[in-house]
Length: 125
Image (cartoon, rainbow, N blue to C red; front, side, top):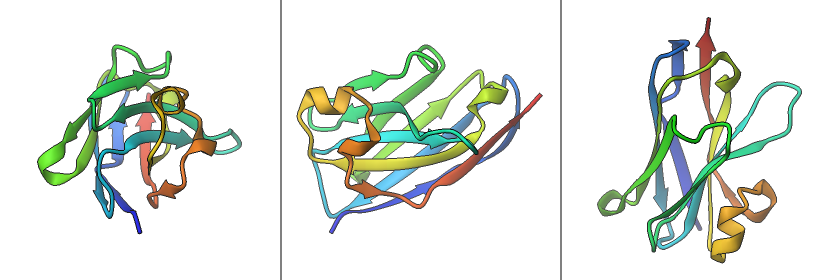
């Protein structure tokens, strides 16, 4: 059974930084992704990494600002978020599954079976 635990959310002013972490147990060499959902909006993919290869994928809205990276020794994936904007405010969820690279790249929530409980990110102006 794969279990995911997120940490690192919080409140920050626009232009600030936050770092989220997702610790995984029960699985390795998975596609691990970060998704977010704001009130009244659909869940959207932010970034993903094929941990076995180290290949990363990003939504256009966060390219150049967010970085997803693995800590394989700890089976953890981090999301470094820089230059945060008010529109980045949302509940952020970690997800994981064994996926082909194309499915990992798609950043589609429907491809992932395993989810963390979520961590809130609030960016104020």
